[in-house]
Amino acid sequence: MTSKERASLRGQANTLQAVFQVGKEGVTPAVAAQMLEGLRTRELIKGKALLESCPQAPREAAEALAALTGSEVVQVVGGGMVFFKENPELRKKLAEKAEQAKRAKKTSKKIK
Image (tube, rainbow, N blue to C red; front, side, top):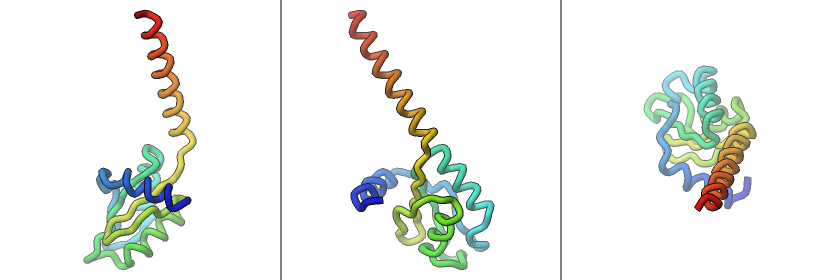
């Protein structure tokens, strides 16, 4: 991932809410599963590491989660973590929707 791509993803992540939390038990399979589910529905997700109770530093927790899920760490600030994992199925669906919208627009122009 290039620095420009990373910067763009950081900007998109500003408006996101945290999808998961890493708590006193640290990185667990349940947290990884929750994160994978979020990555399936959206390619970009945000999570939190609870600073007072998490046994690992947020950066260490982020690296461990990225390794477990096959995602990339975009940013770690304080306890906030941002991850990205490309989903080809999701991209295909979005491309199909864009194509349908384009066809609908052409059809509406012909009717006028």
